[in-house]
Amino acid sequence: MSKKILFLYFLLIALLVSCQESTSIKPITSDLVNNLRAPAYPLVTVDPYFGAWSFADNLYDDPVRHWTGKDFSLIGAIRVDGETYRFLGTENLPLKPVLPTANEEKWEGAYTLQQPKNDSWLSLDFNDSDWTKGQAAFGTDNEPNLATSWNTKDIWVRRTFDLPEDLQDKTIFLKYSHDDNFELYINGTKVIDTGYAWKYNALEELSDEIKATLKKGKNVIAAHCHNRTGGGHVDFGLFEKETNKEAFTQPAVQKSANVLPTQTFYTFECGPVELDVIFTAPLLMDDLDLLSRPVNYLTYQVRSSDGQQHDVQIYLETTPQWAVNSDNQPVDFERIERDGWTYLKTGTKEQPVLQKKGDDLRIDWGYFYMAGALTPATGAEFGDYWQAKKTFVETGKVTATPTDSLSANMTQE
Image (cartoon, rainbow, N blue to C red; front, side, top):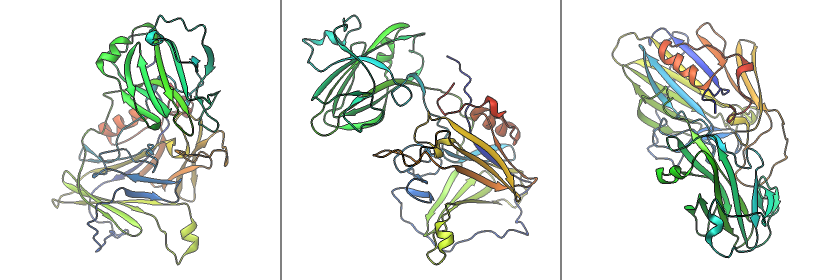
């Protein structure tokens, strides 16, 4: 499996030669203070689909997320006199599929609706030739990614697969969806026993003991699901997390977080400077044009805390996750310059307008734009997810990646 993975990302670089107060832009101030610790901090609040939140105490402790919990990647870093501090989000790319779930591609397994006579069905050498072959996901009507109908109380599923290498030295996650009671075994060893519950796209990091059973060559995952009531669903796969690539390892120090009626106002200590980051949703009831405009704003301002001048660069980045329901959906992207502004645009190739319904969904039609003023001190580009950060840390600059080298989705090699 190739280790060089290209991803589509957006970035906006603002280069500031000093931290002296600008004569053309007045600092944003607020006398309002809200000491409430919000259950989640609102960052972007256009509508329930186009919205993002911070669920952490500090803005840099966790990825920015949609209200469903799905990552809506938004990363910010500041470089001060050559030292880089991350103040927004975390570097958290989607996991790479080793054994895709039905969300990535349909996979075939053997299944039966009759209870096996003993536990031999869990083993790799069990003969399942009498079982029925079917594609995942297995479930009742209207379940996501449904390929094989299952309308009885119980189903037993076996998925055999070949690995090109051992996985013992890798960070591997089991990704699974189930409704209701669910048990799962890898090469005969139990990994999951949920009891009465239902989850979609749950993740379980595999222990060293379990990874040791995953050898080069043939392996098996066996699962049983009991549907107590309502819908039924079964899907599972294996995914790898890439490690030791983070570039923005040093966080800033968050000094305050204030949730105000139309703004969330953060202040950070970043070495010898202070940074304010302000998320604004202009939901003003006396201006219906502004209220209905699907635009939110991110503003930043920097000031010296020691009275000295400092060389400062700001880095802001996001990904197509804002415009898709799942990370494997192919996307288009375009860079536009117009009327003194740069727009970075992305959206799914499919554009399935109003085609999806149900729980745990993000909007995957329409287009997401990231925009910034077009000036000699700013840049907006598409590029490689890891290399752009590394270049910024080393030089305070970034270079664009040719668009024909970028992957069409977030889980593609």
